[in-house]
Image: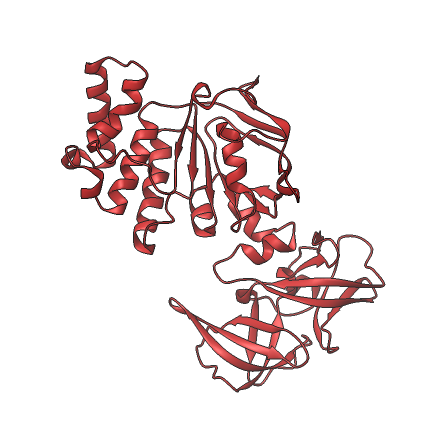
Length: 382
């Protein structure tokens, strides 16, 4: 196992118009840690992985492995193993031959090779398939062979580039569990690249979220979800996207009211620090932290008039998609399942779960995290 560190690593491609693939990044990966680089296509996550592997030289910065600068080291001398999106199995070799190949290249004696192949095949459930060729395997079986071939030589760092993207949803979920189990059994320092947030949240010790070549936020999955530091992270992470709407902050005593463009009051919150007199911001609220009613109660909460446009069914849950007049389209969890398109409703937000982001920079504006009941803004939510 090993500790990996990136110091100011960036990548630019020249030519007629310079392209910035990766802005300078500082990142430390702890010994035995499983960290996922998460972001949309073209965000620079694969470029970062290729720089770590030595497949692409960085334009700036350095890569360190256990205190040694490996920036200019050849890929074969880095003691890293990589699993690609397309598995990259040798088509003319059997499963046994594919698993054995990295050991053969390192001069491991035949008897030891055979022992380790049998051991890895048993761990991955590949023993009945050892004499099959890749074309005789399913996608999930090919993926397990690719994982086994990378793990069998016990590298210091394990790199995975979108390894599950070619599998169907059910098989992806199954393979997520398999990868997690393998990392517990073989706690190798692992860097995993994906655009799938479900994979990132399920597998990782920490998640590093990227956008447009910039490393936006790094933290444990729960922190990324519950305390996004940037509006991009807030909108990107979550099975059902967070509601994000432009608001104007209006100071009221020691709090601020968030007003939609049409003038409707969205919610009143307290900020950590002096509230701005008048500022543009982005309001973020997850659908499960909002409620709706056909006839809102008079409980002192700002109720927002809206009209239901659609119902979005996600598994066992339903979400109301409602349009605020001259305002945003909001998604609200429909716990009762009684809303109907065209219905006039009112929506209220849970103040304790509201996020605010500076409209100009996208960075989070610190909101005081106290319970709604203690503040007296609204009743506590179940």
